[in-house]
Image (cartoon, rainbow, N blue to C red; front, side):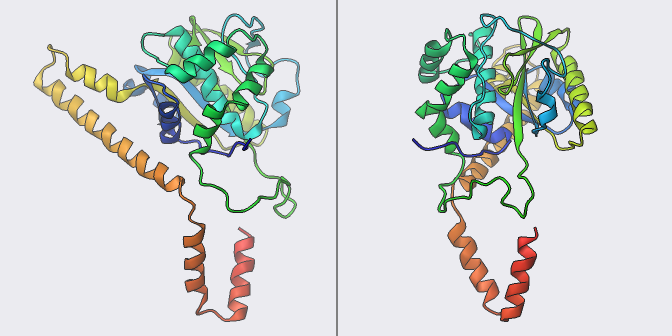
Length: 309
């Protein structure tokens, strides 16, 4: 059985991931800054948030989470624990998907294969066992791995291989509105985290994320990425355009937004195609041509300079 590759934190990749798994009704949207969550084009469609940050061990040393409280009732919502490092992105997405589909069956469709998988694991009541079952799913693993090119070389498994410096490990967690409360789904935790009731999910989850970032900054962590889980924009805009009561101005704006979304999807497809190809041969050929005019000393200096990057 092949392992799990690392995939990028990218809205286009995550959208294609769930599409290839058969999911309908959702997509992902890059959130460039926290306040963007309150933009009408995002907040009106927002169904959840994926938060990416460098793993900080001190966050997980206490018996309680740094924010909120543990929800220990396994019947309340779906939750799986992460058991393999490189699977954390897809694990976070699966946790979000299964709860959204359970909460809103009319607008979120898992598709036949993922629905069958959900029906199989939903009554396990052991988060670690569900996580192991996800890790052993060929369907989920193969779709996950399809966003990286095949490895031509066996990589060194030593995380301290880079001149004694530890490799930075990033972690994904999900936040969802579920039954009028905000829950955090972190696969490294024993249970989901209950952040209490909300009145405006976009605004309230923004406050939670701001507090989390402040905590991480105090620990020396300064890299974050946020991706929104939203209703499928193409489907939403097409439905809006089909309404009989829209005026010419509204129709023009919606048509423009639809074209922008189509252009974005086309760009995503191009980037994903690029990611799936191994360009090692091309890089080596370009390096050969570049180095052909160098002296031996210049070549050695270039190698030393590159190894320090």
